[in-house]
Image (cartoon, rainbow, N blue to C red; front, side, top):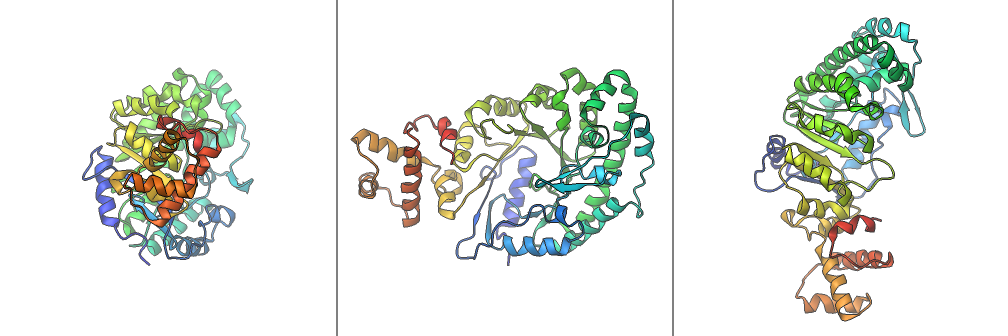
Length: 425
């Protein structure tokens, strides 16, 4: 089965997006179950993390389940060989452990031994994890040829990898007391990370048209999501001294780079990141307990990114997808939505991709309020007739249910669409 019928058109739009351009319409990505095809669930995201060498089994699962998924817009099917965030630590000698629904990397190492530990790692056939990554990448890329993209595994950030050996507290103390050790470790890790990236991506290049990652954003050239989650503990001065140089060097070794800005404590570094020409864009992740992607609270952040002419990667909740395209500049914006049905997707997708843009529910609630009516199926029918709105039965059912859900939350004020974040299921 062909997973995406409009693959070439989507790739052309993505080529333009990376260069901050638009061809015929804005870029957007979305999923929903494929109509009239049995939905078999979502593929197992942690398949390889649970069974390191089961690439054939994991691809069987991926291919079987993605047949029931519609990849809309510029959502290009991607298989991500997932061994957890920062598998480069395993290449450097950490024994990973899958528990609590994620992969953990921890090999306590004395500060006096860390440089020799990292220096002694060889990237060759005798390196278990280096060889494994090559093997599974080659198998996946060769099998996927022409059907879907194979992504680069999540290698991790330089200091995040080092934290697997030293731990955050030791790194902070060492930066204060023995910064030369941290700088030496950074150089060793970055050199080996870049080499591993090149080896793996060159394998993918042999069989695939393009490049992708755990962010599931396709590119016609080489790119990678760069990150340093541990830097949230740092001051801006430390970020400039111990983090930013590695980010820039890594970005300069690529054609494009998106920085993964994770959590409110990382926002203090945004200006420095935006000032770096080699960084193409930002993926801002608000973090747990914060308003979601696309919420009004983060609009100043997005607008600052756009003012610097950087691209944005975001994953707003379905009901905020049309909002972000109304409020933000579409140039350089990549928003992705996950919808439970094709009718809900049609209901909330922006009008430029033949959706209703979420506007029907606003109009219906305003009409009910104006006429002091409650929501009933008869009143819905009257509304549609009075407004000369023709919709399918599926959209009518969706309109009724979505309006019912919003009204049940006790807030019918949709005049300010930015408040839609409070209506998320």
